Length: 466
Image (cartoon, rainbow, N blue to C red):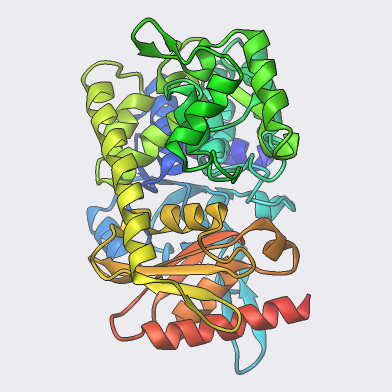
């Protein structure tokens, strides 16, 4: 990957102007921030545009602009067969394009579609024998190029970690591993990142500590999870003050003996590995703010992208701590309410079961940009069957958006949602892709039943094959 990053950096240095194209989630916004800041640093003129997906219509519009060089971040590898007319480089961690020909039992790779000399330069862990779901994120691959452009850009390791955590690459093992861990070590050595073995729940910097525990759906502690009174009583029984004056205390406000007392009490309910892990802090950011810790920083960026303001997230990445931060706070608070409301909507509709999958269709009641987030929350909380992948469908500007989510045990049994989405949507003339544990696609209205039948069949084959 580092060799590929060197080649990409040389291509970039030879350009007079670069157009950065990125995805709208936390990883994509972080990646765009890294790319733009790196280009600013080496005095290459640049601008950034965001997209939910790369499809033919979007690419044709790019071709009309005739940009000198396009830098795709956190996307591009899955659409490489459509990029032949563009001068571009790619930093991505999604599985590269593969074409399925079911009639002949063939699976073609990107190199089957062009002379390898015409394939755009790209940094992608899959092409280096690494797992793009956990080894490195889109922001991480952009960081490798930034470091190749100038070694002083190690300070961008902060955004690479935000992108990786935003893509939940630390979820399986409770910490970032592989190339991500190398990036953390570089940032730590430079004084950009601090890491600690600690309670690894969302909201440690900004949420009241009792609220953080109440909302920790992954833990599922009877009488505490989703229980207002139960969570408050938990701290009363431990005789830990929940307030300092009139202000609710956060986890970051607690003293070490208090933290140890809470951790010991939690360990009576659930295994420590479920809530203890590596936490990533940014000492140059203000303590007690969401930008001081990776999970909360990533959530701020996610809320910007999911509510059509990825440029606001980009401004945060590029250092705006004034107006952009205030506006992002508002989006974050609205994001939390939307998620809660959307979960209630799906519970009201009801989740339907098939032999190998479960699904729900939300119509226009849930924003298409948060379907995957809501699906993941329902799976983690046990409100959706953890033994089956979960497909949530909703209306979007260009058809029916489908988001698929699953838990780790299913992936270990052979599930690959990226292949499911790509093959099922592709057979219907749509598009799909992503990761083995989380993927998305777009089909046309009226194709929902056919898509679900295809997905159910493909998932069954994957699991039986394993």
